[in-house]
Image (cartoon, helix red, strand yellow):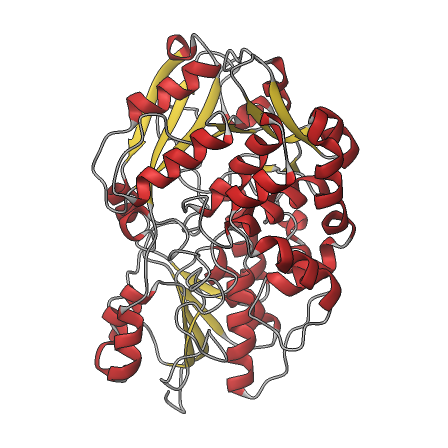
Length: 483
């Protein structure tokens, strides 16, 4: 990069990772410009009136199980900039056809008691990870570290995590309830549940539910992004919105540039600066399944058949392990399941600031083949009605977004892939390619800070933090340590 650069660093893309990278660089004393294509910051962490006036929806991320436990976010004074977490009594509910629901409580003991014959096995599996959560997250929320700082807990995690969610559930649990709970957790991997390493997603998300809960941000996810942006400005950083970047001519010169984009966009922007071999490797980067998204304005709360479903903002709708596994497997064959696994959030039960008095919002999506144009509205609503008869009667308005419409909303969601690339065992820690410092590139001063780098998808900011650390080393500046 140029010696007489206008800024020490330019960060392209103001999603959670771009904001986190910009904050880390600013804390190190760098002059930083953050450039965002849309008219608001946040990327996949924004809020808007999508249905009716006065109903605040989160177009993408809404439940922040990793956001509240993120070591980087925890190191920032975000509450001083307006962020308030709301914690429902339980992290998650998973209704079944027997008119009851499995509940992931904050207490491991209470959750175990709720699982009946699987209670003891669940406690043996999850308990050690809950007790060693900080050590575990320091190992898994970043690039591979050799040697690890906490080899015992990492080895235990690896022993279970390397398996498929389906095999771990069937080997550890004998009953419908334990298996269904873990299947729903593993379903967040957006992969068939018989794939190696999908168990890791279930273990991490289940453990986080006990350690911190699965909260929502008061007023909508935009409040998290706004708090990050305001803190960045307080550090002296500058943000420019409504400024799409298509080439290096679209932003001022800088000593380093960090891109909160996926490999496909990086290839377009960097163009001829990219060595052919590196470009070919990036072109082989694999994107995962898409999602079909629905947002609802309701005249009242969801009429759940299982009263336990009123305890959590998050519900997993898919029935048994076998049903969820079948639905996710169908997607890998390019099919659209008749009974999809639906991830649902009912934020307004616990955050009335999002809705007019007495009304409610509902957020729901299911997985579909990448780039699908198939309308899953009827199938998603049938799954909701299955566990909450009369749901449709309470719908005032709905907003739908197909995978391609999600990509139009957020360019990082290629074909509706919300994780910035499939996170299977081949592309979990070696994203976007196998490289000792995965955030660096062969182009001097150019770095990637998106969820296409470790540790991958989710609103936690750790991709941005680690990428900024690599950039600081390139600038000859000391690292910014987490408290």
